[in-house]
Image 1 (cartoon, one colour):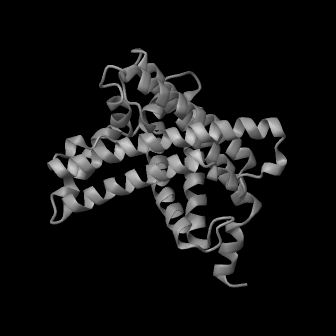
Image 2 (spheres, rainbow, N blue to C red):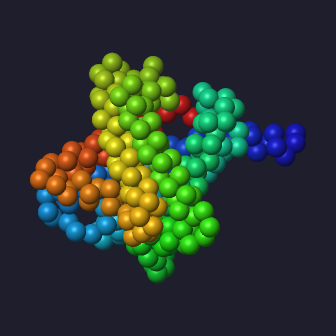
Length: 268
């Protein structure tokens, strides 16, 4: 058996499927916490970061938080490894289509960075806020020739991804990844509702975040690249703000709960 074949078999092994489910559960936990922090922000009970870093910091504040952080860190690393294996060998149900493989590659790299961030937090390494890191990285890219165009294109891509998520939620396309036959009819209805609301809400937040990236490129101002935290806070910047932010928060909480269902019933 060649080395490539051995790696391919490992990517389809029960162990990798177990890592995938751990990773999905870790992602669900992160979104559940982000949704909760956004809800606290909407009700005026929180002023700190409302993004992945903020969620991890919130975990660290509580008794037993360090143990949970280690579990989440392992889960994020597992999720990244699973997505990268899909990028290399194809996603379940998608064969070797380039689109899904590229999506898995991007997701794998993003969650690998989240895993590193979580590891730095649990080991008490000094690090910048997530927003400041995004702004610093944006400034570095825009300092090069064509950098503004590159940042603008990234922002457009984020907006398109967000729009695709909204469509995926409203048309229930997420169900193709689930083993629906293992669910009872009532469970299927609940999972569909959570997936619809949660995926669409996640898409809207992505679109708002992408808009800020595009605006940063257009205005040549890296400080306007505000990421997930900025996207959520921007929803509160009008008369109906707390209600909009509260709705987005509940949507992200729904996605977090749906994520646990996906961890159980996902086709891996």
